[in-house]
Length: 325
Image (tube, rainbow, N blue to C red; front, top):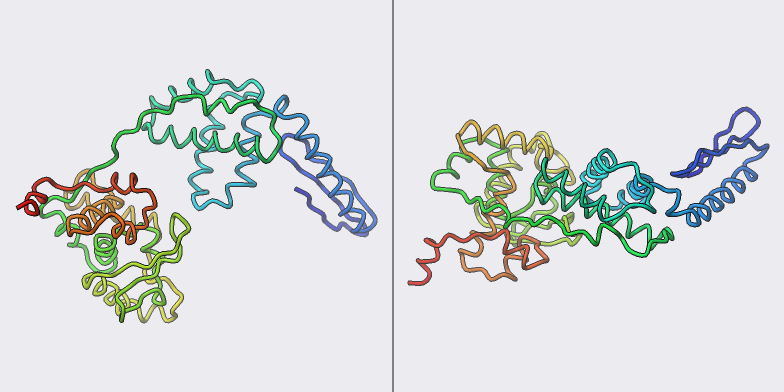
């Protein structure tokens, strides 16, 4: 990346690229500085491609992936955290000598500290970074060693459903958090989707809600139950003096503050092993119990993969008995 600053009567140009020391030079006019910066960046890029993977480390590739590719991802914050973990724990190896043995060692070390799903996600980031380097940066590797290592087996996932009386305990809280919980149970929306609701997204006549920003980058419009409509109207009434414009989000909570408030609520009410995201599981299961088919449920929840949808769905046998007759 090149930066040009004017200092007195001259222009100071600097070019930086991961894996190389910074290069600087001064010029009498801006045109010469810009031309030199472009040529130097081009030379470094060619050198980067020629020298990979013999002189570039695994950490260098991860760092470049973090700076150039990750900002385009919705989960960039979580991915950056995974990159920092890998850079901290994996040996400072040149990419040319990274082997399946190194990956297996990293995998087995992490499995002693975190869940298999966490290890799988970390290795997935490392695999994507190297694959991207091979395809886009000219890294000359015959194969990606991460792809040749077995990922840890992941369990079926959480199957936490609300038990009798637990919903009432959750709704013992007042006002805004209560409305957020009701909307989660009635719609199956993700935490971030709920917190991004704006008045302009709600169609009270058709009883629908537009969700323009989703995890899958596919906007969707969902039906609203009378209970969800009531909660949204209540939030509008409660916030009308604070939120005067249509394009301001309805709820004042931030994602992390919802999570913390939910944890405090569960602790206060004696609800164990319950997370906010479990409300999405609960809502999805309830849709099926009401008789909706998988396509109808996916239209509401936004799941694109039926297998993932089924992981989120845990029907109670005793509830199915009623439908069998």
